[in-house]
Length: 256
Image (cartoon, rainbow, N blue to C red; front, side):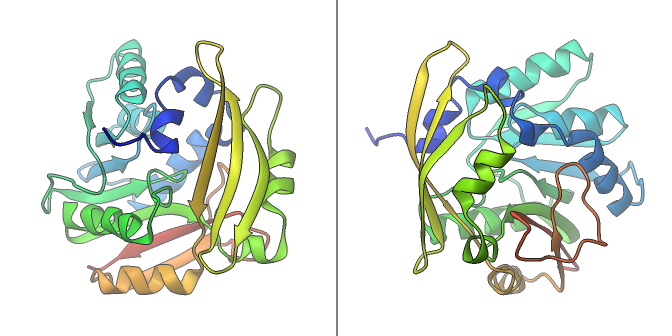
């Protein structure tokens, strides 16, 4: 049996703790932005890739959109279903690996926020498979909105210092960050407490991308219009030009 990857171990028993992390608090503002991008067109079908506990899926459904949430983690999906039931919402939450999706031209929009799978995979090829499968899931004129780690940030800033400044008591702690200039991967030790109170120590690595890479990957998948902005928690905006101080970038691709 293959050893579970760090991201699989992380989300086995982390649903409640996950929702207490500071980076999950931008849901309302992020959904406001998505609505603007969709011109409040509630006839559009939305795929939420790496939906986790379903925070964006549930909020958009509450606002009248038809959203399907997919995630690799059965535990996170169970938490999402419980939260949807609590809100009396009927939502399809499906367990799928984003590198191998069963959808073909079924959705008008795909969202992939807060590193929803991409760019957590252990190889660049696997990350590309996620983009490829999400693209296949979209209709011809579909739109893809996602956030990913900004490769310009570690060239000018310390990832470890940023994570330390952005965390709060009880959140995950990131130590021993080392950024590899040849692969643009940040390796670190993540320490956290799971929902059962067990201390976990995971050896993680995440891929940072520069804008030109993202643009080329999306062009190779057939997207015509690709726009990249700085991604600010809970306050996505087309007015935020990407800079070296942005930890994440917001990508909007359309016109496939």
